[in-house]
Image 1: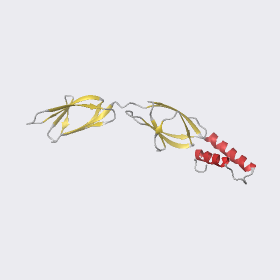
Image 2: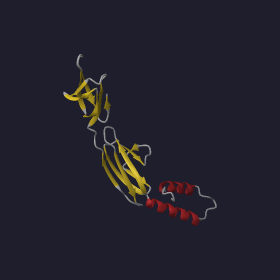
Image 3: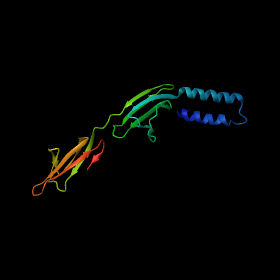
Amino acid sequence: RGLGRYRAAVGLFDRYLQSPDPAATPERLDAIRAEREELLRALVHAAITVTPRGATLRVDGRDPAPSPESLELDPGGHVLEWNAPAHRPHRETITATPGSRPVFNVALDPVREGRLQVEASSPAVLIEIDGQRGGMGRVEREFPVGEHVVALRASGYRPVERRVTVTPGATVR
């Protein structure tokens, strides 16, 4: 409790109460039960709704797990991070007061672009993307998801043209 780890303290009290010291007095056991109840009342109970389904939640940097509909936290500061494929991550920093019941309605924004990287063998090669001049020798930037036409042109060489598909949040080279 002194470290602010109420959930862990409740678990330790539960273990002790299941197999108490044979010399423990009834008063001592009652005091432990009362302390346990006080800690339970101080826990933070968060309700969570997240879109899309299947998003993961990382709490205080711990390994991600499927986002729950409810979450029990110790009072104090926490960092909550939601992630889902093809969506922008969402992060919230909270300071939860003892016994509070915060509600999180999180809608992750879909990623509608990806990264396209084109690098020619020579800096003198003109790179066109979807008929627009992109640059010389190397181009790297965000493009809308979908199919794009990349053309390479250089004096003395036949033009090269390729269709590429940009996917959400990915880099196509």
